[in-house]
Figure (cartoon, rainbow, N blue to C red):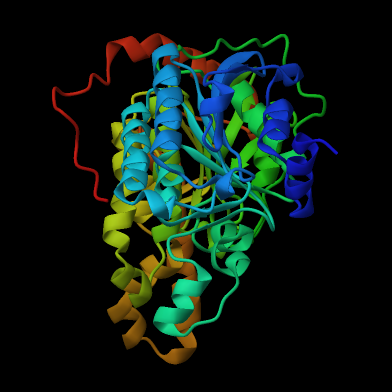
Length: 487
């Protein structure tokens, strides 16, 4: 058995692929050009080539060389690859599989990480940056993925954590495995650090390739054109809202009916599930989708949902990707837990992100749009270019139940108990008829048009074309270094 095969077998024994195998799986036809000499790799292979037909730069750590540990030379190699991607204005992908900093190199290893982090920040919003976690990623190393736009993880073999299980046991006495501490479940469902998770490397790299195929290569690339003739739906619109206004339903059904077949790539699907974000195609054009999901906590906005949506909106804005929001939100999550966690600060992030974005923004209100959450979900007041509403839309400070309880508290209290139920019912119907429906907002031009659900896809096409025409006339950014988003 050759030395090369022995190295491959070492990785295979751990349930992992070798860095070379990963590169061959990622690049078109498995072909790429190395950016560093083989003798100078120092535990990382830096390469460039085509992924889904687009030039991409990749740095893949080689765990078979000193555990993939990062020293000064490896840091320099990765930094040079980042510089090359920045110069070529093409996406950069980092495949992480490393035991961490090379301890024997001391501060030089830390300097290597610092050079990488600096370039991650410089490239942010200029070129897409993707991290793939296919092994351990520990200590300071985690901050490079933390800065990049998207993180992919492979279950059982990919872990991220600041301090490992051994250190935690020494310091706190807690015993925990690496997988439980920083694996798939920890970051896909609990922390929200990871954006995509897969059960094997093959499906993971297939997904990375699809993401590259639908993303622009850099922030200078203009929006794709829509092709109405080429992207016909294979099935007719097939969705009906439940008759009961408080009944749950799966928002994914609406997304499937509105956007191109099988085009939706959901981001962070298992974290803050009350809001759905992801990339889809609309007549062939990539768009960002932000939608409340009534099937999860009634679709309310809380701290995590606000963070999740805000960062995604800012990514779309950075890379000229239009945003379509689908609103069905009863409000912000009430309770002391959310207040103490900082719902004011976190909720403000989503307001800021939508207001700051200058890409085409379209909002579809399908049912509830109540209170501050209505404003936050891409409302006209935050600069949404076009707001469409289904006939089922309800737009108000709050629903009829809460409103009547506040507005008529004294009358309700003064009534005999046997008369209260009918009084409350009458007032709720009156409030719903005069305030909650879409007519109030339509008269004030907070809503541009009321459409039938089955018309949504076609009306989105028209709205997007209108947005492209008017974008040159407004939303000029003020002269400033940058704003101060409430982090």
